[in-house]
Length: 81
Image 1 (cartoon, rainbow, N blue to C red):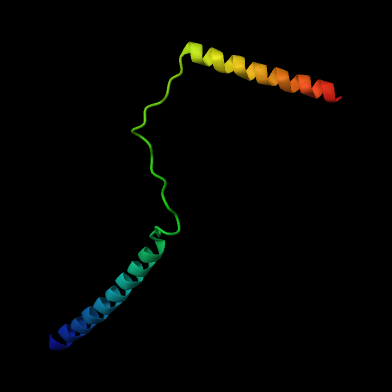
Image 2: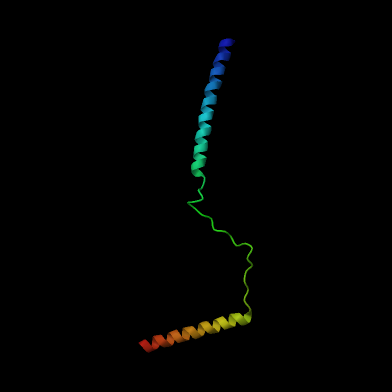
């Protein structure tokens, strides 16, 4: 029985050494997979900012100004030709 228990003890010691080596390799891989803060900075999210709403009158003013600008642009383009 002592020979059998000696073999089992040696096997257990060998497996413990392999397990330690595997755990170290896994830790190295995890360290390589972990993103670094310098490589990929994360932009802060503005979740607290409420969405801006524009009134109907404000929307009409913006549309009118845009139409006026485009009309002036097209007028200038037609005079160049």
